[in-house]
Amino acid sequence: MNCCNQKPIISLEAGEKLCKGHFTEYFENKVFKTIRQFDLIGKEENLGVAISGGKDSLALLHILKKLSQQNPKIKLTTIAINEGIEGYRNKSLITAQKFCDKLGIKLNIYSYEEEFGMPLDNMLKTLDVKPCTICGIFRRYLLNKKSKELGFTKIATGHNLDDECQSILMNQFKNNIQASARLGPKVGLNSKNKNFVQRVKPLYLCTEKEVTTYAFLNGILDVFNECPNVAKSYRAQVRDMLNDFEAKFPGTKYSIINSFLQTLPDLKAAFKDAEVNFCKSCGEPAAKDKCNACKFVGKLEKAKLAIHKNPISPY
Figure 1: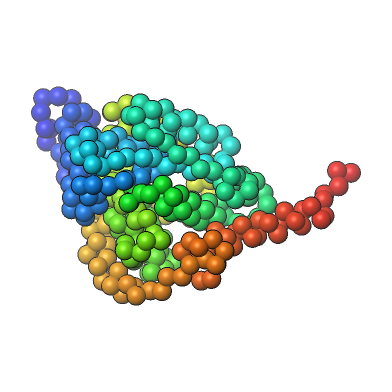
Figure 2 (figure 1 turned 90 degrees about the vertical axis):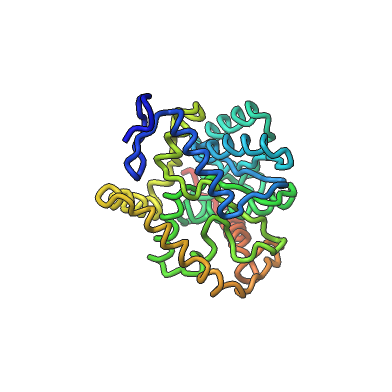
């Protein structure tokens, strides 16, 4: 069923076909409704927005700019992490900077090289570790640390419905139920802990297809580049499996999210008293005495010392 006499550009899950104008209205209302439904953003916030220069985070920033114009007490500041992936991250950060300049929003960029002593590309040459494992640990560490330094009350990320479905299944496959308890539109188990800056996901109920369409139609991004390390990841395998199921059984992803949201309160209740430790090296939250970021920094330092002591002969 078409929404009007204009040419439809997308068919929704329910079968309704929308033109550009009606789809843009539908998508933005969906995001605003998600924010209200899960109480993601208050009337007064020093809100950080994590951006990468990709479609999801820039689409989110585009919409949050509209929200801040309606609510002047919501201050927006963006934060980006330069992992150090040659041929990829520098290009996306240029896109991010241009977009922030266009919207008049300050962009703060922090790099692995400045914080941890070397870019991700060099880390992967130094340690035998999966790219997404070490990258994810350092990224979450920097986002939380720098968000505290910048005084953010919350930080919004561009995770969409597809991303969340993948995370839910990955945790199930790995029997990591406590990790699932930290998922949802609001990330974490204890939002009152001042050592955590709570992360929120306004695109939580928006599919990858919807986000991509919105970004393209609104001139936010016309070229979509994926991190070169993603293809090697466990997440990519789960993503492809989910997409295959969605193609064969439409509505699979929505069903996963809806059933998860029904069980999430019980999950959070089960782990609400989970002990939170703090790293003795850096003071950031940790599962034990030392956080994973500091553990990896230690491994990198040992590896560098070993290379200096036993340099490879050029002959």
